[in-house]
Image (cartoon, rainbow, N blue to C red; front, side):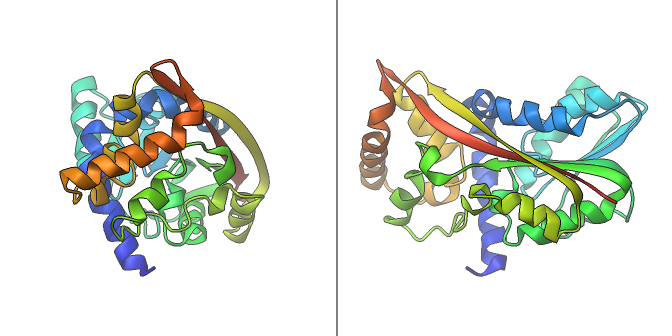
Length: 272
């Protein structure tokens, strides 16, 4: 896939999903985000960069951890996500949060600026993850630490059929290698290739709980990574895609809702 097209799909796709993202995904992603923050071990007064910040689900806990004597730079490729964080920052009065639209592979920050870099569930969408990790390392001070989380193995994520279901209806180029970093030790090797040391990795099993068909379908199509492609579907195409997706998650139905298995991979590293 053309990297420029992939970045464009991500930018405008997440613009489409921004207003629905938290309502469908905040509870589902919380275990991975909490673990990223725990491994980052942020301390008062530190400077932190949050890459692919989305609506700020990790940004604001990070800001609380470093306090007003610290600094958090929240970055995302999506204008709508960035504006969402800006609005929440103003509402909460978190003046030590800076928000900027940036490409993870070309951060505009100076070298050796931050004590910690975090990226919770964003690297899967980057054309060249090692390049993004190298950028994280570049902006970290000596001894600085980085933590990134991605979705795990495809066969451990019960919602994974969403991608071929969409691709059969429109060429979306959403994330052609979505599960690659969650397979084997791929994310750890990417950290090593980017120059990090003292690398550690862990897998975290999780369950995505949805109380209804509406929630499960909304999360998969309108509130997530296929939102741009989904926006081009006519009503008949949407109905057929919904039906196929419901069939794919039927084994995980519990009453009127679903308990869909998932897996995260969390990796931490340090700058020498």
